[in-house]
Image 1: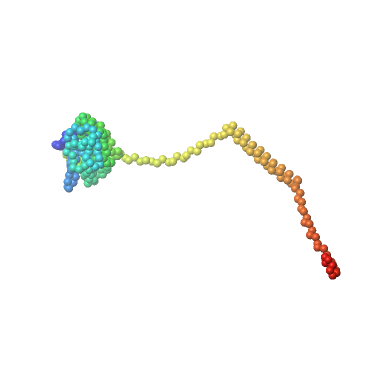
Image 2: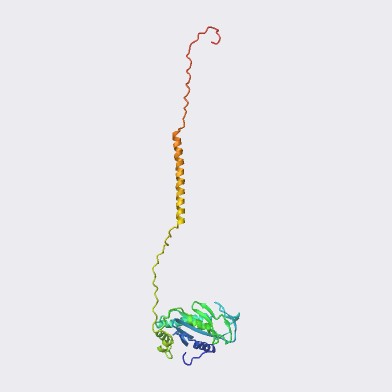
Length: 291
C-alpha cells in the first residue's frame, strides 16, 4: 500500500483482512489504472503465484443482514431490500468491475507482459456482527462477489487461495515487472521479500503426459474338462451313433425287402373288334315282304 493512501472505512477493513492471511501474495492497494484517455481508481490488484485478481470494495451506509441477491439487471438487494451501499459506482457494479479488469490487463499488455486470465472480485464489507449470505456469488466466469469483514473473512481467504487454478507461472521477477507496468515505482517489494514470501525464481516446467501403449487384451485360457464332463460327452456321442446306425439299418432292410418280392403287374389285352358279315344279295319277288 502506498504511503498516504486515502481509504474509506470499508477499504481499510479489507486491507486488515489481507494482513491476517498467511497466503503467498502481493497486494497493490489504491492505484490508478488506464492510459492518456483517462484513468480510474482501483482499490487493489493482488498477485499470487497462480494468477492476478482485481479487487473493488463496496461498504454499507447502515447495518443490513439477510440474503444477498445479485441480478443481472437491476439493483442488488438484501432480503428483498435494496442494498444501501456506501458510494456505489455509476451503473451496474459488474460493469464497473469488468472495466477495471480490462484496464489492468491493457496496462500489462502494453508493457509486453502476458497477464493470462485476469480475474476480478467485488468485496462487500458489511458492518461487523452483520451476517449477509451467501458469502460468495458468481457474476460471470472469472468475476465474483465476496462478502467479508475482519470477524468473518473465511470466504475471502478461500477466494484468494483458489480464484485461479493455473500453474505457478508468476515468479518473483514477473511480479516485479508487473508492479512497474502498473506504475508502482516507489514502495515496490524487493525480490528477496517475494522469494521469502513463497514466490519462485523460475516457473516450473510444464508437465507432459506420455501416452501409454495399449495393453493387449488377455484371452483367458480354457480349463480342461472334468472327468464327469468327459464321460457325459462320450455318452452323448455313443447314443447319437447308435441312433444313426438304427435308422440306417431300417432303411437298408426296407430296400432289400422291396427287391426280393417285386409286385406283379397285370396287363389286359385289348378285345378284337368283330368284322362285319359278308354281304350276300337277296333276290326279291314282287310284293315279297321284308325285302
